[in-house]
Image 1 (cartoon, rainbow, N blue to C red):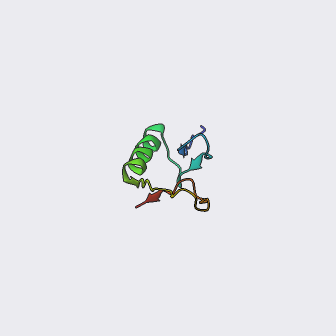
Image 2: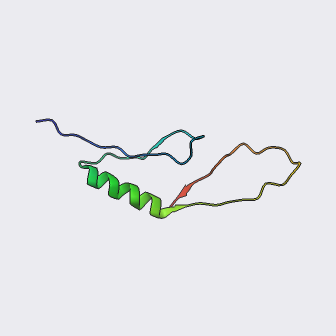
Length: 65
């Protein structure tokens, strides 16, 4: 009998690549639960970019606590 393991991939924006979360899960339900928990704990910060200044390199920063 073959046991499937599931990984969770998250896509934030079309311009950014898929991000694979750490860990593997025995069932799809466990994987979905882990993804929901990750997204619940994720912090998003929106910052102002001054005009006429040099370009910044980071498109997005995500901090997971």
